[in-house]
Image (cartoon, rainbow, N blue to C red; front, side, top):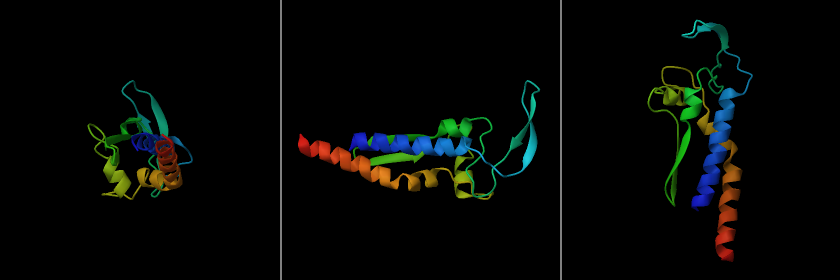
Length: 124
């Protein structure tokens, strides 16, 4: 089962991260500046869309942790990324989900991963 959880976790992480970097984002555009004085236009996400990538911190914080043969945690945030939950759940901002859609989109893949690992275990 652990192998199935690893495969499922990878599917979740890939899709959640991809949803953050994939266009089109249709929220407001605004000027963003960096410490090196570079100024650029950033296209934010609109409510209901996955967050738009700006620094990459949210995307990099997405992880899965397998704590036992029977459980897996899919999470984001921590450290400087204290806004991960706020974006996903819409706390003081309109929802910008990226984790739940990844889980829903991979539901069938998850079943297939478990089926494959069960078949391998039976053959042994």
